[in-house]
Length: 280
Image 1 (cartoon, helix red, strand yellow):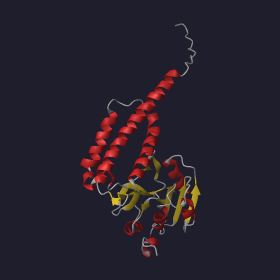
Image 2 (cartoon, helix red, strand yellow):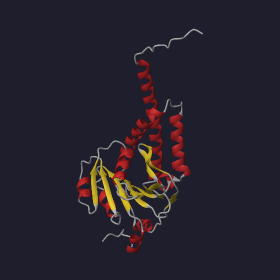
Image 3 (cartoon, helix red, strand yellow):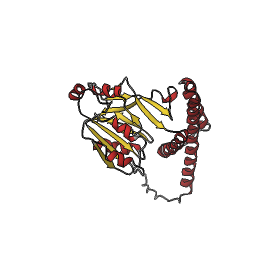
Image 4 (spheres, one colour):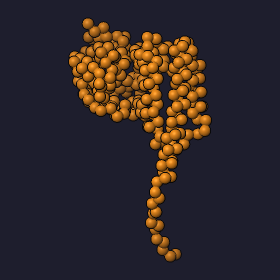
């Protein structure tokens, strides 16, 4: 029995909803995420090249249409999944997210009069729920009309670009983001380098002291203003490493811009033909 299944009356009266999910090497999470989506009219899973049992689990799951696409960016991957869906309303879910029965019931009862709906996340670091800091309540636009929205933003911080009104739902999903602190560090260092690659082409310089300013600002926001200290040692760990990774991003960006500037200076000069002038 699926304990996340909304009541039959809500399902009969609402508009059809497609769930879309991108994944890669998520064998530890994907089953419980898919189990919570059984009430959706369609589930589209796009795998980016898993080397574990992710595809085996998703491919054998009832009602799942499994597609493959080599991963390049989160934006492209999620738009590919969105385009593969058949229904107007799309529910975008990550493989490490689980919708609670209360959230499923709330979605099933929605009149869907807004263009989109933002859903908060209850995020876990290992077995501990992080209740404070910048991780909570962490609202994300996840349920939206395809004719009004599409994935955009920056990699790896993709977001739905929506033309229309957004409402917030009352219930939140469970986000089992990191099983260990080592996983948090490894994944976020990867994301930091991805972010540098994305923004390097849009920046001309990094100001002196900019890395330190961002690091201090991020730590104060996470640990003090958002009360991350109330999560104990985990709150300190998150705030400290969020600040450190912010510092790393701007250091790497400055290095990248210096390298790009040096390459441009070393490039061979190509003389341009000057236009002829006519006598006055």
